[in-house]
Image (cartoon, rainbow, N blue to C red):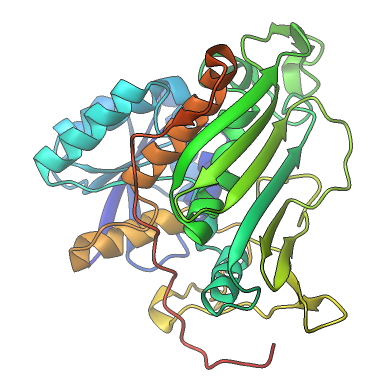
Length: 382
């Protein structure tokens, strides 16, 4: 049974989704829409999509099962709400919303309608994070005690032709990059109890350095360097640094500390630190004198793609949408769920609010720790 999807938002991020959705069995993008009909038509022609249209046409189409919401952050709530009201399941890009009350309203509407809400990032479904979870579940580093993530970049204006929204409300490094790492932490370690943070805006303006607008200055409305502290329900304590103000760094992307060892995630691609589906996983324990690279687990055949790369050790954006399609068919929650996305967003809101409040912020939401993907290969050597 094919899960039919209408895509809304034909910007730059849509290309990887459209490319991957042609590789996943059981998914079909039947229509694409944006505010610019010429942009929609160009994407439809490029990826052989049957219909290019306005967003309203997707909401009204009875053949569309779900809406893939790839609009800018400020539009996420409105598009997702309208999709749910039209009886469609929703999978949205991150962040989930840009306002806590909007997030609560979406979750309530989804429950009322009996519809599933899924949300990026789905990077934690990739081979890299599935490997980390497997090591933790097997107790390779003992009881987890701490986690640290470092995401040092110098913004997006060097590679994105229209980067304005990254520096407007709903943007900034925490809301843009933070979801990848906070979601991975929750997948590995469970929900967060409380947070604190500090942040600053280093430059009031930034210059676009890519595309036809090169040389144009844009205003910065949000903080662009953020430090945070995290306390998890499990008792693990963590830290996260995300920045658009750092030129270079040699710090690892993420480390998990345990009573018997350490797991290390180095940067897979210095040009795209957020793309952490892929790359090696290293661990070292008190019983060993060297770092060991862990082989990646593979998904079962029904999760395969044409290239037969089951381990998802590539940029597999859209994998969360595929999981949501399976969740609809099997009557279960999606792994990349709206509940987890809201929990992550509340954590980020708390981090940003903490400096003004002068204290830790307790989170009111909780979410289930997602189950890892099923695995079809036998255990191999460490």
